[in-house]
Image (cartoon, rainbow, N blue to C red; front, top):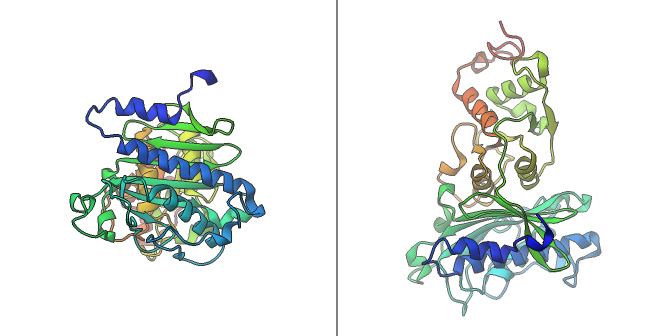
Length: 372
């Protein structure tokens, strides 16, 4: 598509709005506010250890606007200052516009209240402003991921105060979802419920331009991504799937697979959307509550919406991610997403009884590496 004919994000949203004559424009304005936060983060991330164009650098930006939640990270450690920077940028860009009734950030444990005198709106914003921040000093992939929900009417009209329970909606109720990936180019990938579209930030114009319309994920794949260091924690169906992939052409799958691991759900989702494949972050076989996996609300739900809108599938391994009812803001979940046929195979393996259920070897199950 010639550069001169590429739509901007603003033009794209206007065209989408025209499909709904009764729409007020609040939703478009909200998405553009989120896009502004992503542009600001892209500029700051690009400066890395030099401190960014925002003045004092990452460490100084640790409080939101008056009345909003201060950034006290859920977990201290590598990347905490960067996470606070991202949180602050997102809150600053979105708290004042009158489109939101509240926000939930992965960086803080309590919802972010819209401070007076700003009006409340009819939407809720859930976000992880700088996913992968612990890798910032490595110049590795960083991203922002966000989700838009409808606010309960009593919250939107000011009849009652914001609570964590307002955000505990299944992912199927998301109005929109997206992420920004900060790399050699800054890309924004967005779904407003009618497919998935990719935009690239034009640094000369300061505008996101439509560069990947109607993204579709191939239904089959020959690439998978999983953290092999956690092999001892995997459940039997996951071990079976990985063993069969690694067996290559001589194994039951009859083809060779390649492996990838970026250690960032946003970057993994981008690779899957662009090239296909499957990503696995399975739950712990011994303790299902012990998950080094994505936050259901802040990461898994928005990524699942994007994957499914692009023709893929997103699952816990047992059920669709988008059907889960969250129990808390911090709830984490096992996550498998990507090419539909691969994810469906993993789900089938979870439903099939195998010798592994009684402690058998993954190499000698009826349909594994050594079939009998």
